[in-house]
Image (spheres, rainbow, N blue to C red):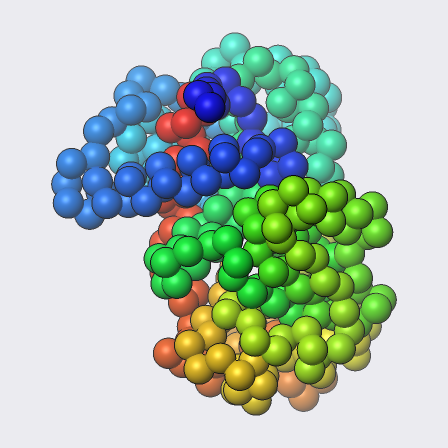
Length: 329
Ligand code: CP
Ligand code: NVA
């Protein structure tokens, strides 16, 4: 069935069909190949792109920047405090102004409603670079990495271990339900995803052959999985919960015992990054001094092991974000 993504925003994977997600993944692979062999076409020549960041970012910011440069577009970084957004000017008015000047807008921030209002009022495609609820561009990079490593996506057994109700877990669950994966969230009950989102995903799964399991039982949750995924225990904006999360999640660290317990020698480890796998960061050191933990959600051994595909995954942020912009502009 023909379809056209021109003019569409990308706020959550809920808005995209399996066919559309598959198309974005295929386009990402094509754009990646073209970049590697030097045949990339500048599809976005003359376009102006606004990059709004309320929260910090390495990968998402750089991926949008590099993708714009590669495609001939100009990106303008609008960081926290650079524009009037939210303080002197409403999100709606800001959307109307930016829409008169830019061809597309990326937004990373706190409330998901902000990105929705930007999309509603700007008149140009708006892309979600992470909100408290969802991180959809991350999932495209994760799925591209799985396809590269395993050769297929539908039928992959995927276990997400850790904070089961954060933006990354939510988006992975939606994407997995749409793309036919055997998806499991393994987390303490206190951090299970919302029942409403699980019901939505199970409904999607019924049409694609996917399954969605939510469990606090580590043994059954990770058994036989092809992909083990984790994310930070404390997301941006939740820093006050460090102690609580450490207490809840200390037995959910991805380490070599967990990799072995999957029973899959070729299990791959993914993490959206940044990761706390040592004390070589200010925050990592602070946690060590306060709580005695040298590693949090993943051990340094797993992070650096042959199982780890995290830097392929990070690179794939560029190719997938580029595909989203090329397809929707
Ligand atoms: N994975 C990810 O979104 O990384 P950044 O926070 O560095 O953008
Ligand atoms: N869940 C993390 C993802 C970072 C890319 C956060 O929101 O901080």
